[in-house]
Image 1 (cartoon, rainbow, N blue to C red):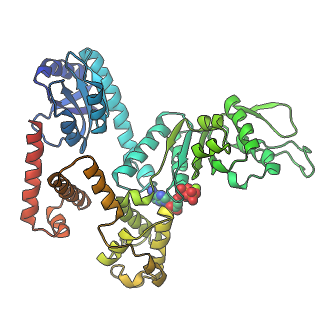
Image 2: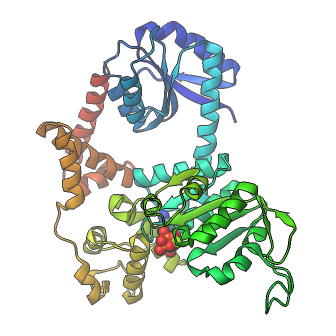
Image 3: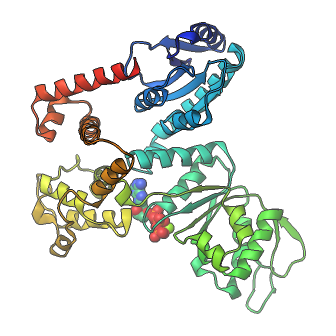
Length: 455
Ligand SMILES: Nc1ncnc2c1ncn2[C@@H]1O[C@H](COP(=O)(O)OP(=O)(O)OP(=O)(O)O)[C@@H](O)[C@H]1O
Ligand SMILES: [Mg+2]
């Protein structure tokens, strides 16, 4: 299928470059739509900018809310380094210096192809039904996991609190890596120094008392696939040294054998320990750390992505009642689930949902009486809660005025509810406690404000 992008020329002086780039992209098979008058174009787009545009980061930030934005600097002089970083922080996927139309077109086409492949994977049921969550923090994490899994062979280290999905991420990396072999999981907490040699390397018949038959170890089983070392932070120091050698040399010896066996596998490790702190105390080898941490990811705790709670609840209810049509929640139950603390993160949420589901009976929504009595103790303090205060503190520390904080809070609330309600103005207005008409006026004003700030 032909690829297409949108284009906005933000700097008057870039018009010539824009038409040359459009022609070169056309030759490369990429069609270009002029989005000069669109306030929120979707999909992949390029903005051609120059040093004269002082509001550039704000413009890119507004565009990047709905689209993947690639900036091309067409000014004769390169942008200042702090403006370049500000553009990335504003959400630009990259910033290219203008060279020639042909080279820029190739650069754009390559990034577009990668982005397109990534979007398809992100939208696939393999990813969406596996790692559930819609919050920005979670989607960003999943996108980087998918990218590293599908387009590289890098070893991956997953760190994060218990129950945040490290296991699921490791399984997804294996599924996306397209390796022909199996996923071999080794739980490092179960490795005793006496048995570890055989578990990892396998052994020959008669290698030690009781070794009646030869046996393959984890390195042999992982050949051609993925080796997942779960709880890698628990690995005793002598085993860390042995593992380092196998990773470096990609070969190992069975216990009782002198012959080297090759094994090529992708390494994925997970831990909820702070390995850098363990390195400082000598509990974890620094050289092993840098081998296993070719790329690192940290699934955030649930308290940092509360927008994921309701999608996860729906997911778990569908799992518990696969034949059902989805079960609505009474507002009080919804409020309870949203405000409860989840020390065990998503696992804790899953168990909470199960307990509520098992008490539920009959038709109709899940009601407050379905929440088990011992659960009710977990009710969180009333809103505004700590995450809200943290977000406001951050805005105040960044020097935002009261008017901007208020405006940003209500704009964000409106955008989020509209997203959740599939852009249905009436339902969104109802949830926000305003009239239909009032919400329409607010949306129109927000759109006009965006356009004005770019002019
Ligand atoms: N994003 C998610 N989508 C769907 N289910 C999830 C998600 N994250 C976690 N879960 C579920 O939560 C439970 C815990 O996840 P998982 O075992 O991957 O966590 P973990 O980080 O490996 O925890 P631990 O450190 O305790 O081993 C599992 O039942 C998993 O299916
Ligand atoms: Mg785990």
